[in-house]
Length: 108
Length: 119
Image 1 (tube, each protein chain N blue to C red):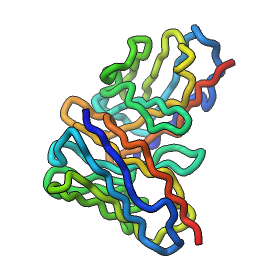
Image 2: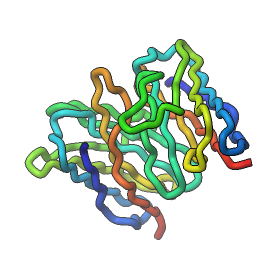
Image 3: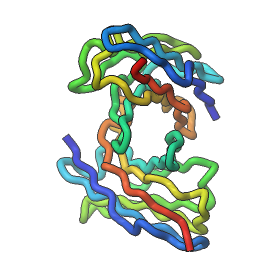
């Protein structure tokens, strides 16, 4: 099983600031099989990024993904009020499909 | 755009079997990986398993002995059965799609249904 470790656990930032979220895998993950999600309280997760760096339909370009191998990053270039949420990375490379434990982006 | 809607009991007794159904609109059962994911209150996400393309299934080993995912293509529905429920199975259960190919992501989600295990 591939374990995904996200850091930091909580990120305290102000609107307009840049957010950098990390996801480290216990084994190499093919970039095609790495995704990122946003989840707000009481809502289902929403796909942000697939294939490590491809934005899903309707996702603003302030969201970007990068990385390869075992280290992946989600960057939010300038935080908008609606971006404060929990973010998960997830892999499809090896079954079972697994999620990271999440990073909470909170208002400072 | 595919729409998904979970349905089933919100309360299950310990040792009983949970049965949930996901109704699909705007797409065909045969096209995607039809998956179940759960999230205990205040915790992270856990993939349960999927049904794909005329009967292929794959389950999380942590649940494999207790889970069955099946589909009824005539009704455009897929279902989850989880046996021997305990309090540890209390969670919001989501159905979701994966398109595969060049798009590996849980693209469409139901709104989720909270299942509480309690006597």
